[in-house]
Picture (cartoon, rainbow over the protein chains, first blue to last red):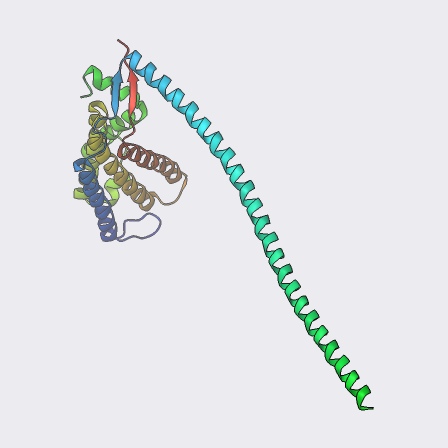
Length: 131
Length: 137
């Protein structure tokens, strides 16, 4: 038997779906009713002095929290500056290392060229003597 | 309990939720005894399921009112779950019974609102958030 006004829907399907949702709700409700909550009572009727004191303490805590947040923001800025300087240092160290390597390479090339010059001079001297 | 002074004060801290609780009780009773406007659920669901639905509705309303007035998070939390399930069921059955039109949209808006409020309140209970009322006397 179809029970839908617009889309024909089997009454058995509706019964099963509704039953499943209600059953889940009942089981869920029972579970929540039987479990232990962190605070058994959540509405407290307190004296004016207690409430005013709590309000003052909350106000002080809020100020401390704001101050702590500002200090954290400043420290974060300083950390960012230090990080930036560290990156520059790393970059410069890298450039220095490459420059030293290049210097070593050039010195080796110079020594090699000196050696070639000496060899060529020796060859020239031999050739002159041989003449 | 709601008829004690402390109970009434506690109900007054969450007046809208208390009102929902009372309305749900009335709706549950009306559904069980077929008062007032013809409920689409009675047309779509078999009798036993319609009775179960209304009993769940009634139990959720009672749980909310008793939980609020006695400051018992467990009663209220369980009732909110029941209410959520009942609201979902009602939305589904209304859609099947009357189709997608303006009446359904209006009903859905209320249902979504109640569902969201129930979830939010349940989260508040689980987290142990406390409402402190300043004593008048």
